[in-house]
Length: 208
Length: 208
Image 1: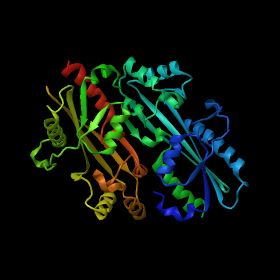
Image 2: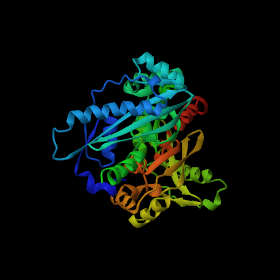
Image 3: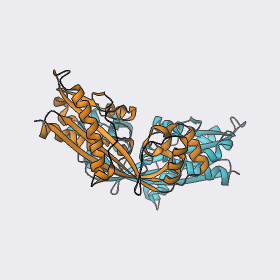
Image 4: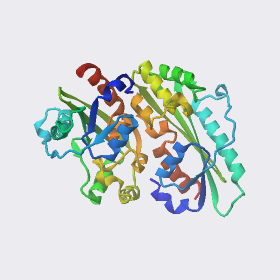
């Protein structure tokens, strides 16, 4: 997907402002040579300050991107710097589901998600010396009906504890979900098709 | 997802009638202790002989399951035998897209899939001493618009050559797809949520 800009990418130092092994795996799958650099940006924005939910998510991603960009810019200027940041949130009705506080919180979330449709938002920000490009993708995730034993067994596996909404689509959590309307990789934390389309535009339009 | 039947599974020798490393990976993700045993069933049924497309796919999966069941039953009867077989097909309009014959055929398929919606069918069959259970899942896969360079680069990666429809969703091919309406794992070759639901029913209803 990045074939049209392959010759341009090598002029850039590309940094993923994330410590997520899932996002790293996805970026590597694209053949994109990106370093991981987790941001120290404190994710404490108030959703009530934003008109659209996507604005809120993109603001969090922007905070991460700008912090990493500021920290790294000037350190090595043999290559131009591009920072990619992403933020993923799960919503059920009007409630935002972040990472569960503990196993009991994971059970609570999964009990609510069972048999229902949750919406996942992933906002992505590109930060470079000339400016910023941002977008948000959404996907609707339909859980099957889960029994208490199924929820408890999944929580016992430890898989839900570091994940927004207390589930991951790419591991054993994938079996809990009967359908996704949208991009699977948006739910996993980085919408690959849109990311590639926007990277192509970034290099062929903004940075040319 | 298999927590309700965990105590029953250990009485069975479970065999996946497949040589697909993707299906093996998925089954392992469920914590299901299944052996791989590729079927020698010749996949040459004529779609014109079937009223519904799902009947055609399930007949192919049944052919694989029965061949493996027949070959293995009686060999080791310390455990009861359950054979799971699956078959995945990609359709675009009325055309069936199997595995591409060569790189040029992969380019042809991907050129047709670009910007369009293809439908993936995965049929699954359980074969055991008391009978058979079968089902088919479908998912709609929306490709982004691809350039010739993007298609050529993906074909050059070798990824499409062993896959129905000349793409895989779980590798670099995932970036070609802008959305899936349905189960991602149906597209990957084994619809996990439905598989678990049907396995639970099989053990709690048919085999009890």
